[in-house]
Structure formats: C-alpha cells, structure tokens
Amino acid sequence: MIEIHQFPCLSDNYGYLVHDPESGETTCIDTPDAKAYLAEAEAKGWKITHIWNTHWHPDHAGGNEAIKAATDCTIIAPQEVERISAIDQIIKHGDTVTLGRFVAEVIDVGGHTNGHIAFHMPEAGVAFVGDAVFALGCGRMFEGTPGQFWASLERLKALPPETMLYCAHEYTAANAKFAVHADPENAALSAYADEIADKRSREERTVPMPLSRELETNPFLRADNPAMQTRWGGETPQETFAALRAAKDSF
Image (cartoon, rainbow, N blue to C red):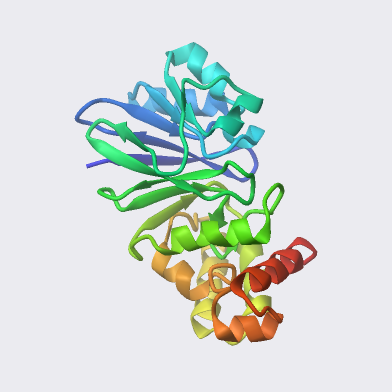
C-alpha cells in the first residue's frame, strides 16, 4: 500500500512525500520548501530517492537543488523545470514513472504553464495535479491558452471518478466564493461550500478531494455544461472556460 504524507509548506502550499514501504523508495511531489521536506522525511524515517515535479514555478521546483544535494535523489520533471533546476530525467505526456512497484502515468495538463504535468497512480487511486486544478478551482492561465487549458481539464475529467486529487494549495475557501457566484443554482456546490467553510473555521484541510465531487461542483470542470455555457455566454466549452477564468482573475 502506498503511503502519502501531506504537510503544509510556505504560506499556503501543501507538500507531499509518497512512500513505497516495500522498496523503501520515497518521492517528493514538487519541492516548495527543501528544509520542510527534509525534516518531514527524517521524522518519518524515509529516505528521499526521487523528486517528481509538476511544473517549473519556484514554489514547486525551488527546493530541487537543496534536496538533491542532501539526498542524491533523482529529479524527474517536465523539460520546463530546466529554467530553475537541473533534471535527471525529462518526462512528457504518455510517459510512466515508477516508485517501487507503483506506476504513475504522466498527463499533460498545460495551461497554468505550458509544460505542466500531473502524475496519476491508477493502482493507488490518486493523482497529483499541482496547480492544474484545485478544489473548486484551477490555476491561473499564466502561459497557456483557453483551448489548451480546457483540453488539459478534459484529460483530468476522464480519470476514474473515485480518483483522489492532491493539489498543491489550500485555496478552497476563496475558490468556493467564486464558484457559488459562477454557479449559484448548483445545490451540490452550495452544500460543498458550507462544508468547506466549516472545515476551514477549524483550520482543517480540504485537500485531497474526490474527482467525482469536483465534476459535480467545480465551475471550471463544468464549462461543458449547457447551463454554465448559457450563464457565461460561451458557445463552446473553451469559450465558457475562458470567460470563467477571466472572471475569476478579477473576482
């Protein structure tokens, strides 16, 4: 059974260490804070053997070099990470990587950055999605296009609905406010937003989240819903997504 250790990093990032107890291998999912990762691994008694980066931003790959220096781990990442860190193995959509006997499928989720990827581990029923999608939200479109980003979200939407999504930030309370504004007649969303407010009032995490719930409530994943297209004036899902993303940027 794969083990996932989640912990807070920086102001609102989540760090993840994924461990295969049979092989003893442990990978960092992104590296926002090298000191935190090294301390958490030491506390767990795990040796970091790999880093899997989702994209190049410093709050995702900024700790690569320090962790590599401390552990001699293997850095596996999309090519764009070369902007800030050396890479041992460059990966792209359709590739697979392994942690012990567990296999992760690499998925192109470009849009937030052009080379952004996600790691889907089917046997474990989890996906590490970085900033591609959040609970009730998605990443800002810094480098991509609406069509590119929507195609990325479609790839995530096609995963098994029971997949647990591990995103990189605790943005859910703010995302919920926009989501209710974007899709006010969605009863499932209203209930989800109330649950989130209750959890955050007690400083509880809202991540990970099941894909099935996001499919039902996340406005960005619902850009192909006819009611959303009517409300947001898009003739295509890409146009609806673009309208939603622009609205969220100024919300």
